[in-house]
Structures are given as structure tokens and as C-alpha cells.
Length: 149
Image: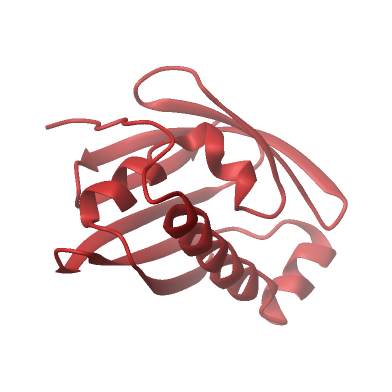
């Protein structure tokens, strides 16, 4: 298993950052390689990705969700093995630190080489920068999925 951890400060309140992150269908607007995400239930999402020419489909189950604090997930079924946690820490009333931690199992030679060259780290860092731009430009989330209270 490989791991990646990246953080970014966003210039929005914690509730705004959290609410946007839980709008999973909007991920293709700021995550490179994510073609589509379908919210199947409160805890199940279906992902379609295409990264470096490799297309994958898989389901991810939300294993823990605490509004304004964190969302954890793990893939279920399929060939993709991944788990992760995104946390939201208020810096002050108008700024939030978003931290994404992910464990993944690269498949095949191309993914293993890409992992060793830091491709995933750079992609996650870029996705977080695009999330920052996306939510700061909007100022409000595209919806308001709160999760479990």
C-alpha cells in the first residue's frame, strides 16, 4: 500500500468547505481524472475515473462522517483498493485547513512507476488547489449535504 497526505488552507468557513466536499457529484469540476461520481445512497458512491489512459469504475463506502470535521471512506468490491480520510480544521471563522490522507494499492507496472515518481502526490496536491479555487470563487457550496450528526 502507498500513502499520500496533503493539506491546504481555504479562505472559507469550515461549514462551507465541508458542505462543498460532501457534494461528491461536483468532484469532476476540480479533480483531474474523475469522470463521474454517482451518489447511490447516504453512504455509497460510484466512481468512474480515467487517469493516464486507464479507466476504472468502483464503489466507495463512507465509513465515518462527522459534519464540519471529517469524511472517511473505503472502496468496496471491484479491483481498486483505496481508503482515505479528509479532515476540516477551522483556522479562524473565515479560514479552514483541509487535509486529505489516502492509502491506495497501485496496480500494474504503469501505476507502480507513477506512484514511485510521485504522480499521486502531485495529483492530490493539484486537486486540493483546484478545490480551493473552486470553493473560493463560488463562496458558497453547490449544495448542503451534512452527513451524520
